[in-house]
Every structure is written in structure tokens, then in C-alpha cells.
Length: 481
Ligand SMILES: Nc1ncnc2c1ncn2[C@@H]1O[C@H](COP(=O)(O)OP(=O)(O)O)[C@@H](O)[C@H]1O
Ligand SMILES: O=C(CO)[C@@H](O)[C@H](O)COP(=O)(O)O
Image (tube, rainbow, N blue to C red; front, side, top):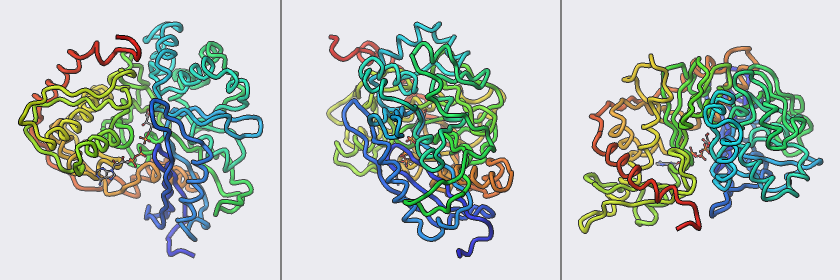
């Protein structure tokens, strides 16, 4: 037996690059054991992963957790949002999952928005104007490009649904993750049959939406897993909604997450509906909302530029007038799916370190541009910004966010807030508590507050100027001249 005070719970983050598992003491929030195993994502414009690899990574991460994982009383899976998982009648993947950062559905996205009433209609109906990340656009892409895959599909799932179903044997999802599909009506909180009919997806192929606080199922026979048969399985949710739980987030506190994706969001009690498409009107995992803006190019893009420059990621130099838009994967915020990276303002005396700083500035610019849009009007604009995700550990990221935001920045000591949020959801199942209240009890957001510095308005304005001047280039579709 472990020396834990309370029952143990397991929280999982199956994100783009890896699966992380934490065994947590439900009484104190102490992390008793942890494990992590990587995923591979296809290179090039296609961004795909085999879902079976997520399962193998989950088993490997739990194996690393050792004996404590065997004592878990409940488990919950948080995961990368939006990915389209197609399963055949045996429950095996028909093809690799199309991930959130695969932009090949840009033509289908444009058509879907126009065919079904335009951006305002989508925002009011689903909370969001779909971008290429949204599952509905990926299904439309598949129907057009691989009709044989669509014919072979007996079930459609999101990444966290796939793993939850392998635990319980039942097809379930939750309101947080389903709100990023584009086929869930946020006003009625139900599948939208008009949208599903339009893209030819039978609602019978979709999972049941489990309510917050409800049990998704129990662990069935578990040859490969450490859990006992009958262990409770929580609904799980998308990774951003899970991190919001993990921080015990209250309305008015903004979060900036620096991972494969960059995201900025806040909890709101009002249902969002942004017709410009900048803010996605996600549901959270409790019963509130999670207005959020997301970029495709964050830590991976900046690390790639550091590698190209042969620099350590911290080797930035100040004083740059160079603008670098690091849109290596196309971009979602701003909506430029066909864009590639763009450099402007290079001079003989520009240093490699200044180029690297320009990459950080370019990655943070769009997120901070959306910050005010995700906050309710009455939110305190001087409150600290919570900085999370792998990038939050980096000094160059911290300094860039401080300088371009002009706000104090709080960096929670807890590293794996998505997995902690999932663990808080699992703990809530055992105690009947609100999972966000569990996380506040665990004090997961504690960490140093970095003092605000004067906002570097000139850099923000310069980047906005380059973006608008370069629009024709950034919007150009491949193959057009
Ligand atoms: N000490 C660090 N300083 C700066 N960046 C870091 C550091 N540690 C990890 N990272 C970045 O964090 C990223 C992974 O973050 P994470 O939030 O785990 O991503 P994801 O959830 O998308 O898989 C890596 O791409 C890496 O660039
Ligand atoms: O698409 C979004 C949010 O809408 C992304 O935030 C994904 O959920 C991927 O998350 P990470 O792997 O970067 O954590």
C-alpha cells in the first residue's frame, strides 16, 4: 500500500506529442507516481496518428507509474481536442486519426460555413465558426477524399473518447470535448441533426454525451492495464477543459497555454458566439463555458526555428526590428490555413538571437491579441495571466509573454495541469465534489507571480502591420500564383 491519505485516482493527458499519466492522492492532490510515453505524428501537411499508439502509450505510461496505479479507485482521460477517430465494426481504426493541426480540410471548411448559413449562423448554433481543426470539417474532407473509409466507419470518436471506450467498452464523450466537433448545438446541448445530415454522418455512429459528475463506465477486463476490474471511469474531456479543471479556474482568470498548440482561454458563465471565428465557444467540463483562441504554431515552431538557427531555445537577443510569423503548419488564429512562415525586416546587423526572439514574438502575438476577446467585459484586466504547458517552463517564453502582455504572469509549479484536471474529475466522482473545487482544495495553481513590465506596444503594432500588409501572400492557396 502507498502512504497516501486518501483513495488514489489516475489522471491522463493524451496530447499531441505524448501521453502522460499521474497517480494522485484524492485527499491532498499529492502526485504519488507519474509516467509518460511519446506519440508519433506524420510529417508534412498531413497530421495523423494511429489511435492504437495512444493506447500503447497509455499502457506504457501507467506501467511507469508502478504499484500505485494498481490501487486507483477512479480514472479519467483528458486529450487533444477535435481529432477524427474512425472505427470499424470491430472497434479497430479504419485509418489513422486526422488531428486538430491537419489543415487539409480548408476547402471543406470554407464550403461548410457558406452552405449552412454563414459565420453568424454557425456561431449562434454551435458556439463556434468552424476552423480546419473542427471534426466536422475533417469528416467532410474524408467523405470527399476517401469515401471507402467513410463506408467502413461504424463509430466516430474523439481521441479521449477512443481511450475511454477502450477502458469501459462503451462509446461515450463529454460536453467539453464534443463542443469542439462542430456537430453539437451549444444552445440545446445536443447533437445537431441538420449539420450531421448535411455532412452525411449518422448520429447513431456518435458516442453518448455523459453529463458532468456522471460515471462514464467501469474498467472492463484489463489484461494490459494495472486497474482492477470495476474501477470507476470518469467522463474525461478535451485537454484545455481538463487544464481549466486542473487549475480550479474561476470566471475572469485568463490562461495562456504554450504547448504544441498555443491557447488562451477563460471560464465564462455566458455561452459564447463569436461570428468572427477568432474565439471558439467551447463548453467546459462542468456546466459553464470556455471561450478559447488557439494557434497551430507554438512551442514546436519556435523549437524548429531555434534548431534551424543552431541555437539553444533560450539564446534570444533583444532589440529586434525583424518580424517573423512562424506559421510553419499554416495557421488557425489568424485564420490562414494555407500560410507558411514569413520573415520581414532582415538587415546585415540582425543576429541569430534576434531572429529567434522574433519567432517567440510572432507566436505570442496572436494569442495576446485574442486575450481580451475570451474575457468577459467585467473581468479584471490587471489580474495575473496563468501560464501553463511545456513552454511555461522556459525563461524566453515567460519574458516574451510578460513584455507583450504588460500583465503579471503566474507560473503554477504543477507541471501537468491537464492530467491533474483529469485526476480532479476522477476524484470528484468518488467524493461528489465539483472537480474544480477539488483542484482548488489541492492548490494546484500555486506558483510564483512574475511582476508586470511595460507592454511593448510597438512590437505588437509592427507584427499586426506586417500581417495585414502580407495578407495576399499568407492567404494564397497552394498551386495558385
Ligand atoms: N524547459 C522548457 N523550456 C521551454 N520549452 C519547453 C521546456 N520543456 C518543454 N518545453 C516545450 O514544451 C512542449 C511540450 O509541451 P506540452 O504542453 O507537453 O505539449 P503537448 O501537450 O502539446 O504535447 C515541447 O514542444 C517543448 O518545446
Ligand atoms: O485544437 C486545440 C484547441 O482547440 C488544441 O489545443 C488541441 O487540443 C491540441 O492540444 P495540445 O496537444 O497542444 O495540448
